[in-house]
Length: 178
Image (cartoon, rainbow, N blue to C red; front, side, top):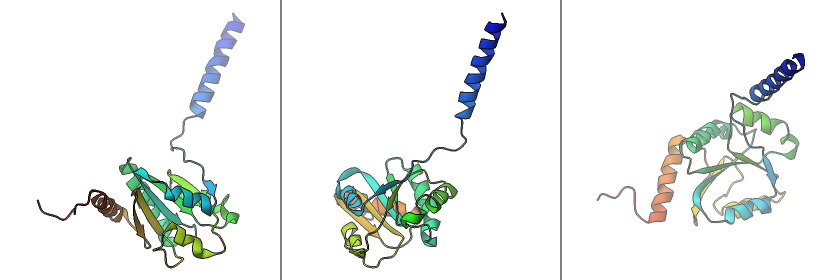
């Protein structure tokens, strides 16, 4: 009798341990993925039917950190949008500062870690409009259409840009009267 009771208690203990241990009040974030510049450029050249937003940032960039929660909220409110944060931080902070910022800002979207090449001309492969090596920079891609922004954006800006991109795709103006 004791062995059956002990077995049941043990099974209940295991169940509670695993079920409560796996509960988390916070959603999990995807781990950052390191890519070469060439791998990033390859991804950017792929046509996609889904609106994809690439936001280039770094942990030392105050305007970047300020806009990231708006990007995250926009992506959450628009599940049809794919958001990718592209960190341009030095490799030396990939395992320390980058994860810390991701956690502090509650970032759930994919994060790519790019170690920029010494030759800064790689940015022209992202967009010929990226004249100055400054961030934040945002590239929105849908189909073969692209919008490039070399200034901080907020939630409203992202919505307007999404409409502009869709207008470009449908070749009609959102400001035309019917």
